[in-house]
Image (cartoon, rainbow, N blue to C red):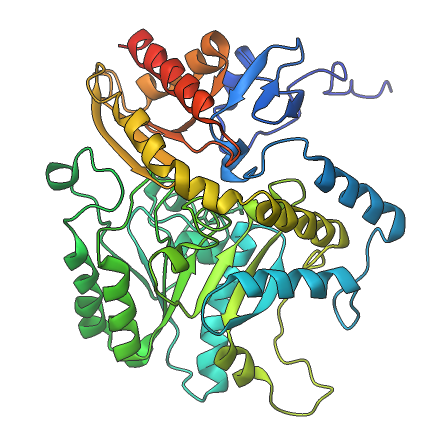
Length: 445
Ligand code: PLP
């Protein structure tokens, strides 16, 4: 009997890779292939430069091919490839935890590592439920998120998240999750730079949810301070403070998912600092290593950590963790990345550039089909009108045109383009990104 032919026709066959969050068939017909990167640019296999308008996937905040990060990863691989963090430990993971905790406000001073933002989200939700359990309040299990929220793709994250396509195919999800409304109202917020004046009252919806379920059943509220993946929704002025007040009043933990907003994207280490609101936990990922090695985690307030430190000294306090929680390569990459952020003042740089960025991007508001533009920190969301033949088609064409014709990487959600350049972007490059985007918007009109 002759063996079945291998499904892989050649090493360069694109078939075998089931690409994540991708229109696989369209991509494979006309690939957008990236072979290398340097500074603000990607390069195709043919060597064509592609301006990185998105810091990869909102993660390469220090830009690409940063020598200190490369050297830290190389040296770490030579020294220690892997060590378990279950019952053992290696020095750099402790150093990384201390450095990350030092960036967080208030008494957010303990770090639980995970391998990604999704794992970080599920970890935070599990810690919240377990926390109430160890305090003897086992009925507090309900998890509250927000419509249009994104917290990765684990079952916890999609249950609390509010993006319909990420939820509807995956069954009943976590029983007991509920959602506040999104904070966006185009009529009242259109073309706002920074936080909209209108919308703090959306936080009061949490009071309604508490009245419905009772605080005795609610463990935590998880939100992104600025929704990113759903199309860039900056928080209305006063909204986050009001949420904090309501959570405190009802003894509900507040979790900020800072996977995107952490590490300088909004001009401070965390959005919690920008908004002067101390949540009970912060999840992070992406920028912690500038995307160079996968890493995520949760920063928790001291009383939460302390609540678990009971029982015999040799008993495991939290039955949770990942093989790659605090991987040595990730820990080394994060230390080198945090050095770059500090030494080059990249968070301050993002803050300094924010008004320049906002003015530049807002200049696109008269272009055809632009329904709204929102900016915050070094982030911009541009809503384009959908084509009559379907939502997402104009956006997809824009992304393709940007890559193939303009040499620009943009991020797409439906017909919304998101721009989130590395924090090393220069004022000239901001101008270049905006002019490329202008030509793209005209080309898909
Ligand atoms: N949380 C937020 C706010 C995110 O934006 C993302 C990814 O974009 C995640 C969680 C999930 O992170 P990951 O893709 O690393 O699992």
